[in-house]
Image (tube, rainbow, N blue to C red; front, side, top):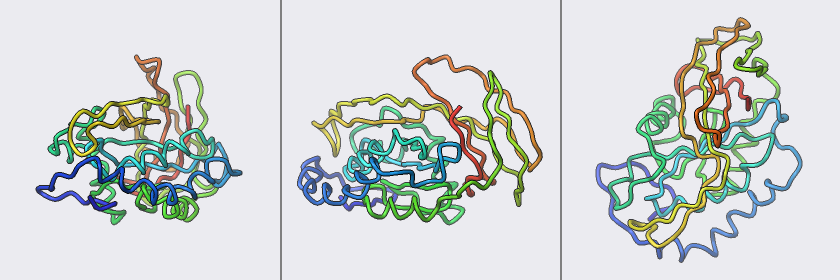
Length: 251
């Protein structure tokens, strides 16, 4: 399988051995991300984290290197790394255990706005730059290029509430509540292109819910508690659908 796969009507099956044959080159490609994982802050700061969204599937043999790259940066306070599992490779013999149609639709929203394609493994950085998540140098360059600095409204989390400060926006912005699992989740893959391997995921998104609209004025939004104590939460303020992310905060 090629290292960057767009979504066709049909896709030829490959075997997990193809990925294993790529390991030496992939180790070199990940050097940039490995350095990023241990380097000083590359985004503005922990209060203005750079949002790195990975679109991947356990049924795609090109995805494990990108998943590994995201895992390396998942613990950085200045980066909010989120793993979205898409559904369009489920027909390759293995159905992704985390995939949801709404995650596939979110990637389509980005493609409609001119950010990347409907493809795996794809990363979207701050809703502003697309990169092949399996290419460490390309991903690092996109993170640097799309840093929004300290711009955008300030988000302050209180008990059961997120307060979004004053700012400017060219069009109404969607307020997203993200629930994600920050643990390392090991998934044995028993069929398909990655059959016989175990994939370790971090920061797996389990739900993405629109909870309001921000028009530039200060506002408070209620945050319902999660029923799953393993899940962490974050707020994204995003221009339109698939537009630039204006602000983000862990809560």
